[in-house]
Image 1 (cartoon, rainbow, N blue to C red):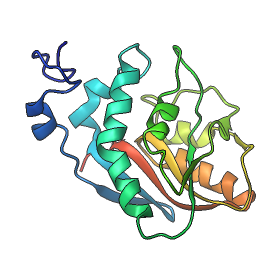
Image 2 (spheres, one colour):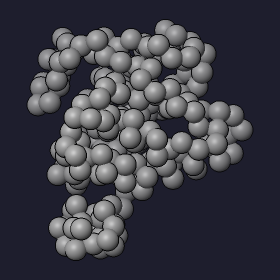
Image 3 (tube, helix red, strand yellow):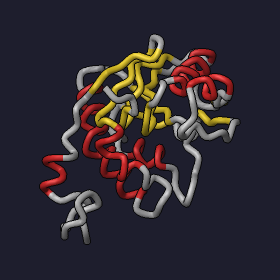
Length: 192
């Protein structure tokens, strides 16, 4: 098979060179309102990989990216926490046979980490791709939460642009007595 990044022959999804060069995360923290958002890559660094999310190979790519960068972060976070943490994905809808958010979350399944699959779904089908901040403000996601109340969660998404979606998700969860510790995303679209 070929490396999904450089297209050289490789037995792994990403060749050793790409794992060493391209897929070395740089963890960044940014705030959206009062929510901390941790990202691992600049969007432009892995854009070709992220754009494959609704293709057949996207399943394998998102699974591997989450395993490489998100799982170690969650392992480190929960190592000495002494209590359960729950993961809530942002709008885990199935498109083209799978949910890329659910695929990412499964890679973080471990002791003391519980999944709240499909607990936070959007009632709006509006796409924010390439849209302005004003458009995003005028067209909220209108999330509905049907998960457990009174739990502590980490929000999971693939990309953060303005942070409005994550802030809206947090507000909805707080209305159900859910404490959001922070959000984890693969990539940050804000160019620094």
